[in-house]
Length: 67
Image 1 (spheres, rainbow, N blue to C red):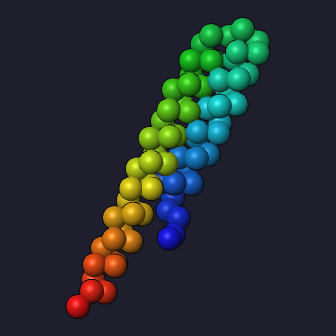
Image 2 (cartoon, rainbow, N blue to C red; image 1 turned 90 degrees about the vertical axis):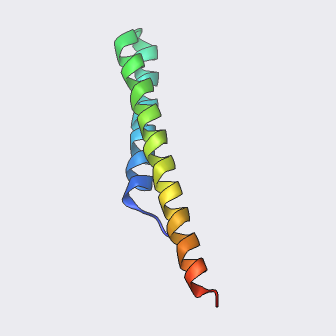
Image 3 (tube, rainbow, N blue to C red; image 1 turned 120 degrees about the vertical axis):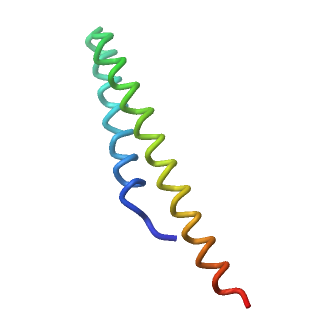
């Protein structure tokens, strides 16, 4: 199974969102906390999209191998 750019970028966004959310919580900045949560959710969505895209690609490859 390969890795595509959506999987990588999504997981990076998710991690950055977690950090931003935690930093906002630590300093009591609810705006940063909310932005972090949004970025984290966007990252999860993008990574999931990348996962699905990769699974479809693999399934199509497997289907083409069948006689």
